[in-house]
Length: 117
Length: 113
Image (cartoon, rainbow over all chains, first blue to last red):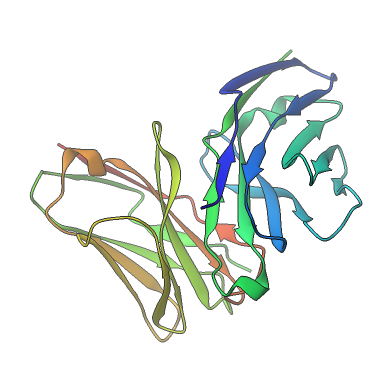
């Protein structure tokens, strides 16, 4: 069975600094997707970034980038130039690929990010 | 385009009662998934519906059920509520079953007393 582990329940970062959130996963599949979701205090979960396992290049979305280490099954999220609006709970998630025939997501337990002014 | 809507936003029920939560996906989206979010367990997958059929199911007891209508709107029902069912219930919609992007609603906060 697939698992997703976020070992940092809470992280803090100074405004304008860089922070890295960790995520490890376990799977025997070769075709899968990895995601980072953000859940601000308003509760609406939004997709931050996704990574296809078959792509070697790390995904980047503006100030958000990932470090995808497939062999180590590691998928960390780097937030550069942190802003107050980045304060939220961040969830790492895994989903098997299209070829598996099942599409349910597995989420980590989340990391609460605090941004200090 | 309107986002995913969930009703009601807040609900208080008593142990033993049943509850029905509703989710309206983004227009054109045909896949709806439900999650239970609690502080201790995080987000746990309940089930997914596509074209009015349950396609995937998580590890929840039979008290949790759902359905999807022809307009893709979905409902989930929890019967014989227990205190442990208190949680935020999130609904997410996707364009297709194999779409890798899902869009979440604001959730329904269920409190069981």
